[in-house]
Image (tube, rainbow, N blue to C red; front, top):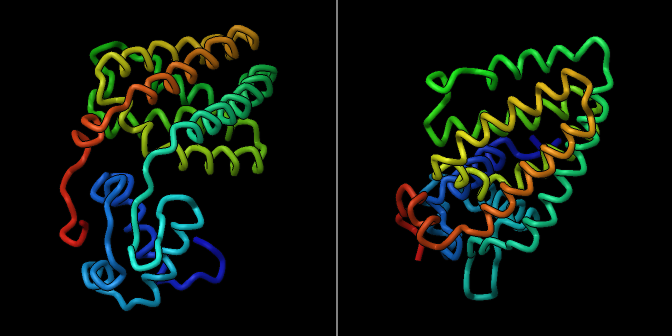
Length: 229
């Protein structure tokens, strides 16, 4: 929560962002402040606070007499965020792999990812959360709070498309195999090899994002909110 933020505005902000990430508010959807305030059952003041916060963060646009619009997906910006994520995670591997004895976080991650095929998660939504946890766990293990803060921000910015990655079954198996191998290499102190694999792993995810189509986005949409046009 932002320091000093209105608690009601914070709640509305979180609900709006959740609806954007779940594609109930779809890229290109338009809506008015009045309609959305009525839908969420709040006054326009906390609603406007939440809307302008999402505007600053790049999730919404607003136009004179045109109301609010959910931003289209900016693939060029996503490419840059993926590149930043690679830099952070390579630095994390370098630190974690050089620790002796191995950092306890590695064992915790192995318990989730070094499992038999029949024990693997298959639900795309849960798989997405587990995958986020793996990459966050690597950075968190460095003990560097500022690295983790920046990584969390990058993760949130790309979350809207990353969750679509696991609509493709082959991506789940590949993720388990690659995560398990990365953890094994880190545990054995093979920093260079772990870094090479991680870079390839994240780069492949970035390439998969480029394959996202309007039909895939529509497939992910649960329902259209009644106030959008």
